[in-house]
Length: 554
Image (cartoon, rainbow, N blue to C red; front, side):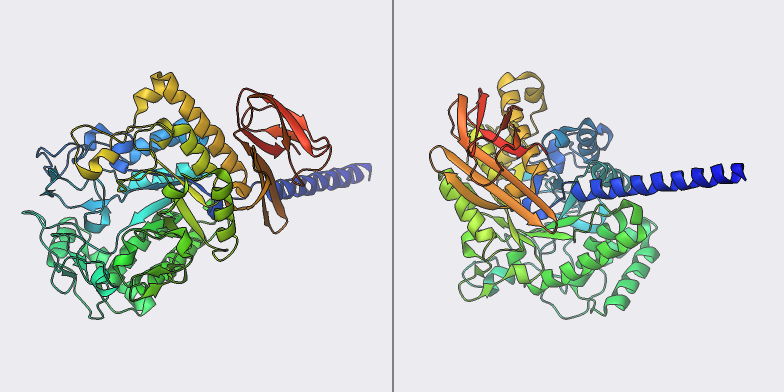
């Protein structure tokens, strides 16, 4: 009897401990900082230029012709990205999304664009959407990359091209006439001559508006048969068209091929290329299939699901500005891309807005994102792979760049090397090649000035990652000179509030916090790691910096 009683008490105690631990875990999970796409800290890199993790795949398809400066393959690959994930490079920067240029199989040869002979190192010259280009790596590499990124709380965004194939070369044939057009060139004066046209000469434009069913291109059939996967690919296509009821038109083939990467690898988002050059309905259908594929992946991989966030899509609509609100004007037609498949748009206006003072900049973006754009977002950038007029081309304002980019409401996009002042002026290059140099890893290792810039970006990046309020919250100005503001983000039971102070005095400084923090609250400056207590609505911080990033220590 005593033994039974002891046994019963043991079971009761064990059960109580289990429930207590479960409750503790539930509380911890509730209090954990949620990932919020609208305030994400995103890192954009050119796969071929970031880091060479596998030199054995540097040359494929006899790509041995001499290219113009920075217009050939340089060796960067998926293994190189994995290497930096493993080293914690992105974690130290507070990155929670990585977007890299397309990794699908590119044309095997290259073309002379008048800027020197060029290969498809950038990833935008597709030959086969269903295969990875061996210069970038294998599908096994991609699976490993997604797994390792997710383990560190980093989402993966691929770059999707639907508008065009790669150029025609002596070894890369043009797709059939019912698939693509080869002219006229776009004029950009109205909707039709921006969509039913080719971006440049010899860049075949996919007939995404076509309602006529097409057969697979003969060269692709031949290729798949040679690779021993023709039957598998055809069966997969048959299943897709049967499930969706879509006609076998060019856009739906490509949508199917791109969304397969979601189902197979569990990627978290797509940045869509050249969006304004197709009818908006293309992207509405694309998003529908992205959502379906993401749901299927979650269903098939329940233990790998990170959270309940939906699949995220960002549109590159060239020259879209946040000031446009939800509409992009073609002159004869206005399109709302937010209502046609996209949760965010790349904001081409930010680099000019960044010339303004903090008060103007922050209030404008907070007002628009919490007003007419609420529920959606923009992706802000200061330099990119194809914008020839970056905010700081000569890299003389890297500290200011980091402060403005990472503390402005919206999604922040670091372009690889922004954080390390990688040169954007490379002698001997022509056109956008100057923006696409190899990542300056050696400077990061050895140059004190580079390390100082990087540390600044790391501090700001981690603050943004730890506080959704920075990118997704409401900005309230507390003081104009010196500039002090609060940001508050609320979602369900979760609430996050911070105070940001800029252009402050170095040394001892008194910062008003408004109603952001209660009297007597313990506060930490995430930039200097100094702590303080709120007294009479203010905190005093003694640091060598002119910036404070105040967070609650609760």
